[in-house]
Length: 178
Image (cartoon, rainbow, N blue to C red):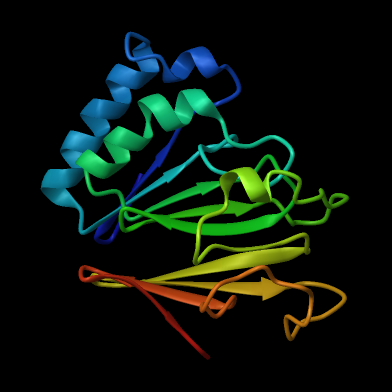
């Protein structure tokens, strides 16, 4: 769907065969990305099992192999996933990848952090929500902890980044403090 200047594309990730380059969904997705590139300032892709996660289920190799190149080619602004009950944010080639699985179910450990995380990533096993605000080419993601410690004293694993807010503009991502 399209809202103002942004295109939101939802994918079915429950069958990894949908990520195959010869699948009907993959072909449809390429067409949607091509249309979005022509008409939208921002493209967001949402699906359940994403390419990158420091939780016990990540990464999803089929998504890394077949979808990430499309995200890069078509300048997707952000990829939003769930599945692992954690918070994880990573920036790969200027694209924000978010795992926002902390909506209320029991939280997962961060068992794949050593394997997946790169310098600058932010992650925690914490209940949270993510607020996304779009103002033209400016996109701001604000992460809000829901329990235990709303001031983020929970042990966030990070490197020189504020765990609360990331603003993404046409010039790339930058972290800010609110």
